[in-house]
Amino acid sequence: MNNKSLIQNETVFLNEVTELVQKARDTANSAVSSIIVVTYWNIGKKL
Image 1 (tube, rainbow, N blue to C red):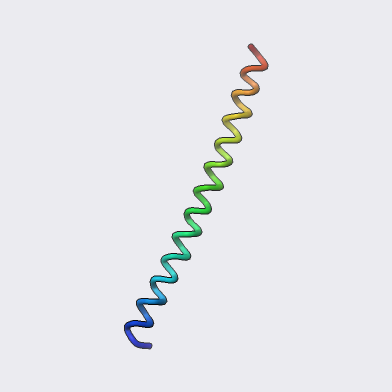
Image 2 (cartoon, rainbow, N blue to C red; image 1 turned 30 degrees about the vertical axis):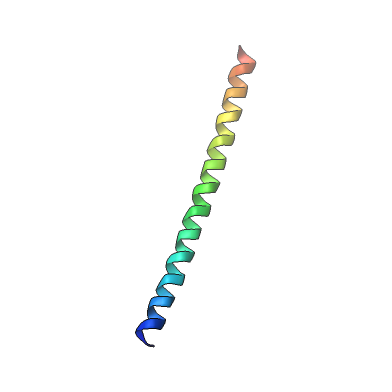
């Protein structure tokens, strides 16, 4: 493999890893938001 191919492969790899991390962050944010809504809803029911 030449240097250009290695750089392209590394770029593709890093882009894929970045995408995986971003999807995980989005999923975590969504889960936390849902938990917060349910918690506030339950607090509201007790008021």
